[in-house]
Length: 535
Image 1: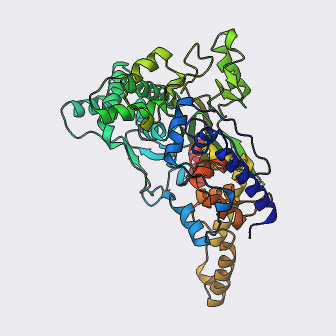
Image 2: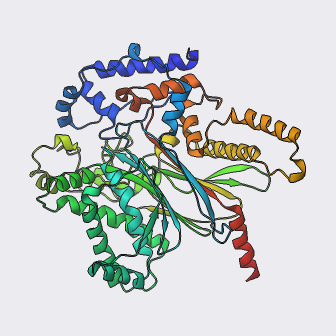
Image 3: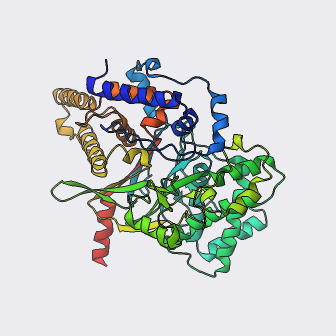
């Protein structure tokens, strides 16, 4: 049986949601549960955020045709076994340890662990991790899509390349251009660290390469011998990729598949948070409401959470003021309504989303050649008070942090995690996990390796493993995000319920959650400062 407190709240809210689905506004509810066009906020932390039914009117006709039946509270059965829970939670786990060189790991990045738990079908979140091969550094990215997954997918494949070529010297760019021009092998730019379930848009890969090439040709013409600084590279790469996404959707083509895909990418949207780590230099670029938080342990062993990003939404007063200042005074009361951009979009910065960037005339011109927009999830709808576009930007806010020995890890995640857990709570969970793992793997000297000692050690390890079920830190965070109670303890009933929800109800209670945890190599960071002291 489910705990009384949880089951009462959960089933009550499910019934309310189901009634909404069956009411006269069922089409809006369908749009709401699948999150086709905007972000809604529901939680199970003792308060239910009232949904705001904002969707595009032309979408109504397509809803009831797909599913005539909607789940009710009486239909829900939370009989999911612990083995099934673990299988679902661990399906997208990823872990990568940075290899040692010369028998030593001199890299400030020790390893990273990542995971994705979908709520939407298909999942709209994406993640990326790669090592720069022609320049130094590691890159990690979290991409949270909305109105579909197309834009997040595209940005997750392309943004690192735009950043990497921006960092390259003019000589390296010229070598790549020469090889491309003469159809010779091109220098590899990135070493990707992908999960087996990650995929690429192979159908338009050549288009991506063509536009990336145009970009590096322009960089060559800038005559910048050493390449851009990391801050400039990230700043310009975000905006250039967003511009290319917009242009690709406008260019006429006879290839129906390419045309449809570029339109889907441009009309959907994605927020992005990207970190670049080179030695002790950490840069984080953010556009939207994904988040990066540093886990710091002081000399007394006390842990603290240091945010390296700010959310670009209505809860950020400076962001609201920025948007209001970019438009006429006559729009001051309409540019942000109900804590949403033009009353519709939750994030105030994002890739794609040309519906909030193009003029109405341009949208009409581009879409007039599309015979059937509905399968593409594109609808001709213009927000009220749409007078002076663009209202949305992909310009990132960039933070620089110089790593110190007390900086132990970086947590990057989509807003699905931060809706459930506060920054400090996330850092505490990771810190406790790391502490327990170290206890599970003590350094045993040869002198102590007696049979009795090892037996007692194994018993202690077995006891501690009961409280830490996961081998992946990101999975540990996701488990707590959706399954912990008010005391921070995992409730199996709640966990089973959250993972058993049918897709037409799941989005009401949790968002897609994507987490990447980067562990820093304290020894390498300390060595850096020692070497600097000698100099």
